[in-house]
Length: 104
Picture 1 (cartoon, rainbow, N blue to C red):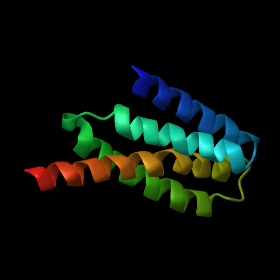
Picture 2 (picture 1 turned 180 degrees about the horizontal axis):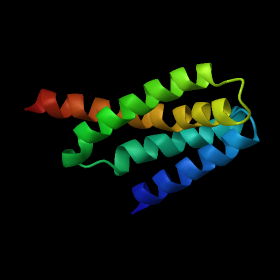
Picture 3 (picture 1 turned 60 degrees about the vertical axis):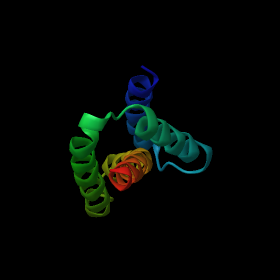
Picture 4 (picture 1 turned 90 degrees about the vertical axis):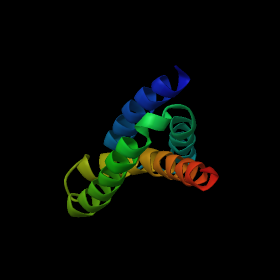
């Protein structure tokens, strides 16, 4: 339950903070921590591969889209804020998956 709420709150917070400007400092750390919580608590064994695929696409699209649309008001900052939450979540899930594969 905590993982689901962290995901929802994190995405909403990322969009709001991104719309208000660039996400730096304490707010960036809050999003990173939320991303770590999402990666640790929200993704079960059956959801790992779909999450990693979606997370990778989201990270690539946000990074490239943020660079491409950085001149548009709000869009670049929102995409950057989403990166701040999804990069740690995806890294955590990927590391957990590697450890799971190594135990097999």
